[in-house]
Length: 189
Picture 1 (cartoon, rainbow, N blue to C red):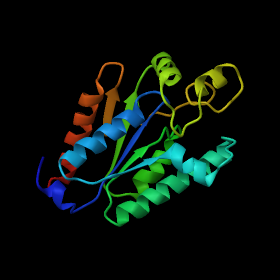
Picture 2 (tube, rainbow, N blue to C red):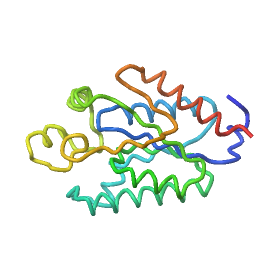
Picture 3 (tube, one colour):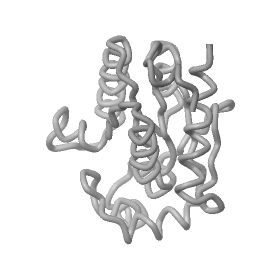
């Protein structure tokens, strides 16, 4: 890895986005682990954890989502302005959220975690959801919730994300390596 990245001359922000169950959180943690092995610090902002503070009793309305995502983007901008490298772990189903981040944050990298919905549903049923709500796809399919990305609301794919990773074909390890390679490239003078 180039030495410049260790000097933290310019911070960067990587938004790892995709459907719930696509692998965002696992990949985010693996990228952070690999960066730390190289002596590069970063902060992961998990939207589900942040949501618990901003909206402790979430309704998942469009208005509430807009507030939570704009708060996430602003928090990220503040951290990046202070020189902190940030990994955003958030679905960000509306393109407008990611476009706002791109507009406000220099050195912004969007990583789209592509994964077929049926695989995401299977993974989500098996995973430890930590901060995120449990059984979201089940609730969406059974009409208990009408705000589940990929089921009741669309996930808007960016026309030009910097990286696209298909986690139905790519391992966590290889996914993290691809993201690290891109970070190295943006850090080159």
